[in-house]
Image 1 (cartoon, rainbow, N blue to C red):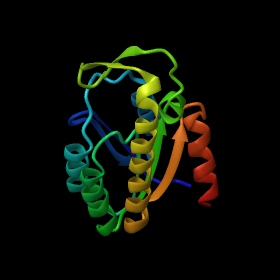
Image 2 (image 1 turned 60 degrees about the vertical axis):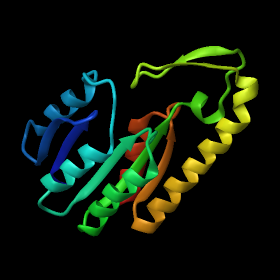
Image 3 (image 1 turned 180 degrees about the horizontal axis):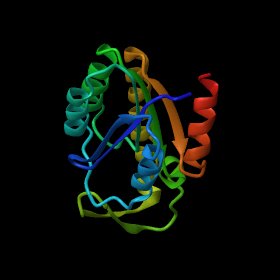
Length: 173
C-alpha cells in the first residue's frame, strides 16, 4: 500500500530505532534488523516504551511483540499514553507453550535468562499456583487492553509469528 514502516528493538533500553519510511531498500534493512540475535539480556517495557512515545511525532500504528512478563501497571501507563496520543496500538503477547501449560514433570533448576537467577522448582508443588497467577496476569493484560483500546493477540510460540502477523494484517484491509 506504500505505508511507511519503522522498527524499534529494545532490552532495558532502546537498542535500534529505524524511523518509519517507505523508500526502496528500507524493508530490507528492517528484515536484516529483525534477523539479528538480540545483544541484550534483560528487558524492560517501561523505559523503552516511554522513550518511543516521546520519539513518535506523527500518529500511526504501534505494534508491540513481547512475552509481557512484567508488571501490568508499567505497561498500562505507557500503552495508555500511546493510545491517548492518537496511536493505534496492537499487542502480540508471545509465550512458549511450556510456560502456558506448565507441562514440566520433573523437579528442576530453572534459569532466568534476564536476571541470571536460578530457582529450584518442583512442578507438582508449583503447578496450580503458577497457573493461577499466570491466568490472573493474562486477565489483567486483557482488561488493560480493553480499557485503552489496544488490540490484543495472544500468540503461543508454536504458531509461527510471521503467519499470525500476516493473518492480522490481512484482516485489517
